[in-house]
Length: 323
Image (cartoon, rainbow, N blue to C red; front, side, top):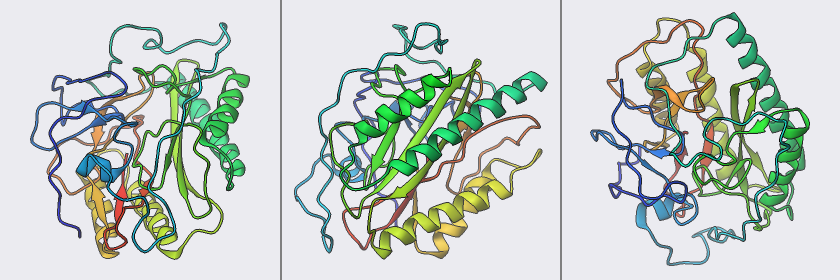
């Protein structure tokens, strides 16, 4: 497994500025937009524009234009188009148009019968939108065009695109290409043959958030990238398979670690899964690496386990990123 690399303790956020959030129960109620550092009592927001890739996260700079042993170029941000409008009759999450930072629930949410049905509905719509977005993927398409298609499908189904207006996030979907770990902002960059792109969909329907993502191939993708995505999916499937009432949350991290380590991959530790329901992000915090965390899964609780792959600058260093 790749040895841990020290990461700077604070990152300026493109969503909420330079932010710290107070400790809550368990490991901290961390948003998927938050950066988590083990052993610290605070978390900060990831800057998805300035630090758009894992290499920038680690080194804060880029010194080369092309990736070693690859035809791919380093990821560069394009232009971001204006916000897309949402019809007035569609209910907004509480954080939209609020001057306060997005909140998160410090206690896990356990759903009643109505809540379960609402979660099923929002999750189903999110899955349908994700599936549709996947049919669009091809070389020459911009991530902004993905955002436009996703945005219209969500609002046409009477839902609100949860990322839009979360903090200062300007788009309706997260599109993370190649070495961008997660929370990439759709822009004018054109998808190129050989890219991989993670599409992260969250919809707010009937007062509940449905959240899902997956990674797609763009054109002819090399074997290294295909294997990275394959192992990432295996880690996710294995982690889901052990979920049940009473299971310790730290079993998720061990399960992912064991599968990733078998294939000589490391797991990015700065991003976490989270509770989801009436609140976009809440406890429990789901760590995707080996840990001694406390807490057990509850009946009728909903939370995310990430499914994100990223490509590093060096072909000799491979990471599975979870968020």
